[in-house]
View 1: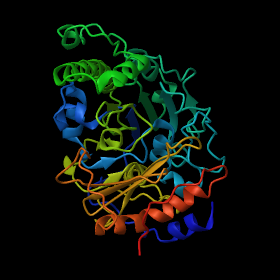
View 2: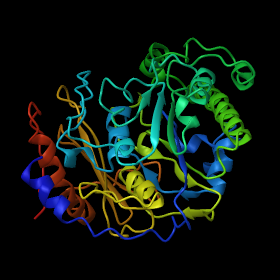
View 3: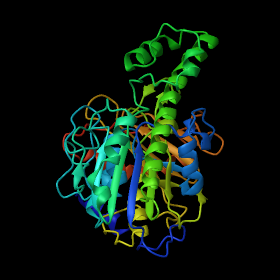
Length: 430
């Protein structure tokens, strides 16, 4: 870890107990439900069209983070941030988006290693698994972390986990179903089947790419038909997964295993479905890829909606706070309800090839996105939550102020071995 990260870590506020996450006694067990590629605006609580009664109920019963962002727009850095409580740059290790999935350094500690519970990971994404080091600390790991595993099989594996027989357990189940390619789930594709057939197979990444190539030439009606059909397929995957999450919770409740269990639910990142003339995820940092869901549910926790800024780095200290476990000094996130309102919130997507490296900072209702090809975008989030109205100008005072905050993070990333040289903006903060 370099000098600059150490300086920033030294500035971390002293730990303070969260007023929102207060229990008379620490919960006996922990169930983590993480969901891959889930757009926040797809679920019912946030006005989405997908049928998500189970997720909506969890968020209604929990302490729910209604202005939550991921640290990145793809799985590896996102789950690293969520399970370490540290933004990647501050770890001195940022997963690359160019297919070189180097494992986490051996001294990086994750949540499962910070709690005394017997723990298990059941993941449908190999990026959350033993090959990357993100499974570190779990006592049991699923034998096949495979993107092709449907939610139904994942739930079956989770329910058979031997850790559920322990006195104190932590079970982490990571669902993959909203991720391309989309499989037809019987009973969940009525909306798709009611739509006219198109020339594009919108269940595959290749079909999405073909549609994107033609999108600019389509008239408004045909463009809308493509987007509507893509969203219908995507929503069908979410609805099917939501039902399986409900089955898992019902079975655990029937066994009496949820009476004193903390449920932590979060999404790793979102998905671009032509929103900014792009598809899938992991190349940009716009709202559809970085806004997420997160909540803490326990019978002893009063339901609350927390509307202030939170990020994935806050999940680990929040869980440790609830478990009455110490928060290590290296954790830079803060328990929900503790972080000051003027704390900036960062996100990063990094590649050592091309121009795919982007970093963002959000502060005081404004968000600046800097691409390493020199492009800068600025969004006023209250008026423009979907980030389409770029307010950037070289003299905009918010752009200058946010660049001053972001610039040290850019320097950290540029100092990594093998990092390309970022093209500086055409202006510099005074």
